[in-house]
Image (cartoon, rainbow, N blue to C red; front, side, top):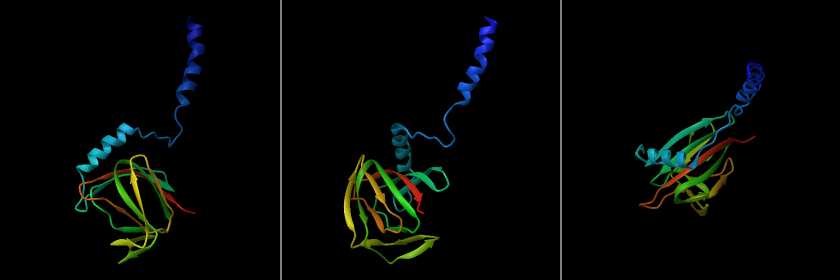
Length: 155
């Protein structure tokens, strides 16, 4: 019996060492829902709350909750990918940014996107916004939107 246990020990150690690879992450739908509800209680004056979930260097993930429209934005070197978790909104892409100004390296903000295409989004929809593209999230009065964001550095 002792010989069997001794032989099994190295195999068990190998199994324990073969866990998830570094950087592997699962965001469970129930966890994102709970975090979205927590964000709703932490909104700023613009009725927005965000939480960075992970930073992997060339890309990062976050969760955002809005109960009002956001301003226009453009990321010169970052692509945005949104996965709508709850609520609904209109995403405006393209066009031009009114009252544009640089807020940091590669980051432009303004009051609104004019002349862009409007796309209604709701739960389960996925939005891809290429780098250097004006965009804005519009939320109707009395509505909200919570979305998972992946920001990827463009080459």
